[in-house]
Image 1: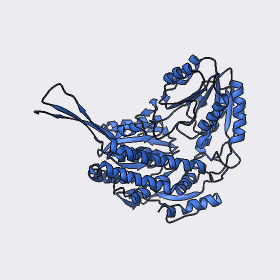
Image 2: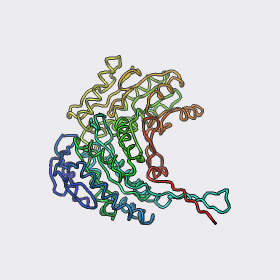
Image 3: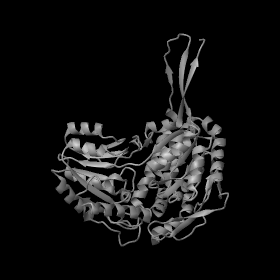
Image 4: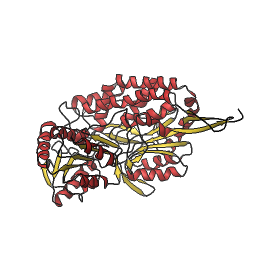
Length: 519
């Protein structure tokens, strides 16, 4: 059971220190239904971001280990795709049930390796499990079609079949080099939910998977592998290969170029997504990409101001601003700008509490590492040098090197880094605008488009703006959007395909046309 896996994390919850060791903590790769060491016997350290203390050493898989995992997934493919949809549904539902039964221990594991407050971590586990539940139901609804034909002696059938082995890649927030190209990755932030949202869909339709988790947060993926095994997912169907920063480029290349891999599903930066797509094109693999965003949060003069401020806090500061869809810039109409800023400052002082994620009152845990803190500092320094004003926050918190004060900037302009780069931290820059046309132009100027938010009481304006925003996800008078029933994904350079919802299985299916003649 997972309870024995997380003894070290329970110790962390008691003492705010995760330096304790446990032989039961899963730290090996999970390949072909077995827990194994890397061929090189190498390991890398996983540290608690709040304190920097060691959680455990984890197996450091290299390219040969990646190839072994791909072969294991390929060998198990025929049996898994031949299983009835009802059987796959049953096993996914059992996996979901085990996650719910062990949600407290899984949440503690996330807080230990990721730093997010325990309440948020618990919510993530419930959210992550919901994807297994959802896709367990969708497994039995992969319908084809019978198409009318113009020839009386023919019948046309459209079948949907699993694409094959799927590589799932969720790298870490560090500069990596793939074929001499560098990119900054920031997608370790939901180590359980990102995995189940992808793997649940792939497994439901009959694909097998190889998961490369983020090197900062591999323990959650390994814990889910243990539960998958306990649920009865057959050997080789679900594989997890942790790797360090130094091994990530070579492992990622194998997962994108191996001829046995039919599709890749990646969450990370736009720059790295492009690199992986170049790798995948050599063997013409299917690819789904959830990439970077630059979410605008627009507040019109007609908005319910208190509701807008509450939505702003929820959107911007969940997981200390380290979410894929969190607001990157606030665009507030001039008629209510000053009132909005004043209410935001009060709400931040009242509702946001920086601390260790295991402290019950904490709403703002640490950032994942010091590099993330340095990026926030750099954006603030750039903005201030160009005329922005710090209304609250603006510096590292006294708790330690990875903690940063929730920060609000005013007098922000579109030429500042904080409006042009995805922040991934607790920084809220506020820009003032005059007209609807002006703010739409500002919001759509970005070459990415994952999420966008706006608050308005004008029904005609709501329809206009919702249709004109160039993003894949729109929140109208709502700051929290993610749900299993709705498609998650972006437009422009924010990605390809959709995750979750009934559309989430599409990236893992091939459509086959069958023509019956001579009837």
